[in-house]
Length: 134
Image 1 (tube, one colour):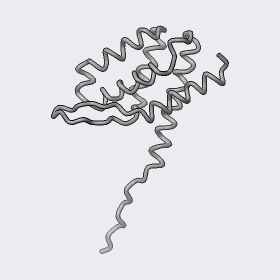
Image 2 (cartoon, one colour):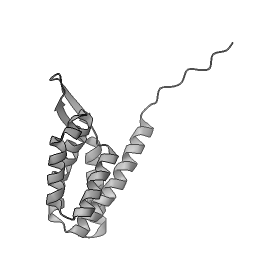
Image 3 (cartoon, rainbow, N blue to C red):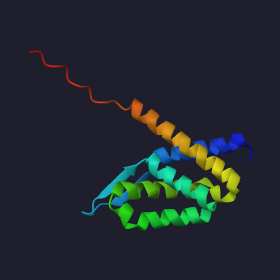
């Protein structure tokens, strides 16, 4: 696959990671929706792939993280990993070789950080009240 198509795939993954919503039951049995994916958690997953070089091991890691006590301490963290798992399953990375998958994951990591920062800039921030006069 040529680099243009690999970057398009990376862009699709990053956009999907921003828009994905995991559905989780909290400790009280209420359903929560976890929006988006934390770029830091995604970076950890990508770095693991670069180290292990096998998409099967990456899938296994994500499954383990979702079930781990570490992720279950915070519903948000578990939701991030569920979002990552869902997006990567749909992405077709398993059909790419190591070099191509690395290229896609690396670019998707950078684009996710960029899109996340852009999204935060667009969201209205509460205005500070004017200073009080004495």
